[in-house]
Length: 155
Length: 136
Figure 1: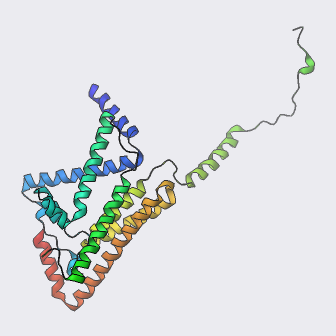
Figure 2 (figure 1 turned 180 degrees about the vertical axis):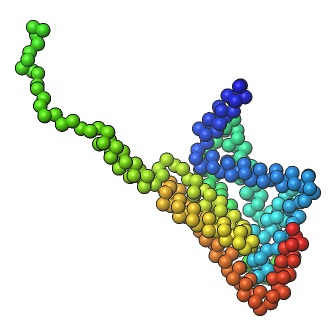
């Protein structure tokens, strides 16, 4: 009975404390966290490491150029191994995205549970725009390096 | 009773009795119809946010062929719905449409080019499928 009351008050606090935009983004963040946990569980149960799956990039096979997502998996693997510089070299927006994601989720969680002050509703959206801009800029840089200078980012 | 003055009492004749139920029902339906067609003004931006997220994923997954196309279409459709129904979310909706459009366009170009290349070199597609199967 007491746990049910606590659960209901937590649900009410969750609905009332977060704005519409932040609540949707927080829920999407929880889904992403769930996918991450599922991947970790898959590794421990079956031994399959999803980061080791080398999915051939159709864009690269057809055009022999980097796609906007090229290097993402390599960068994530490097980040999980503690190689920050290699992670930034392979895919710069990933570290930025991870930092924004962690800060946003932690601040929302603290705001819901302990009432800690957070930024206004929807303030995180500009950081998402910066992520998109970084993604497109690094794609252009890689294309220019490959086409103009013959430098292949991933040998 | 002595102070009661009959001159101040007005007699009301021919009062029109309004069928309040009928009147209020028609007013309610007219109000509801108008309200339903107006954009969502309570700040909800569900379509815009999901459009933006689908657009970002469409750009990241444009190399995955059909997956990029599906995400791109979802981003564009949700972005258009958001512009029509959500007043406060036009910026996010436009960003979602642009990102989804880029992902969709590139994914279609990749698929068309792959189809054209496969007709010239059938072994290329076989090699790609083998590599895909080996990776999984």
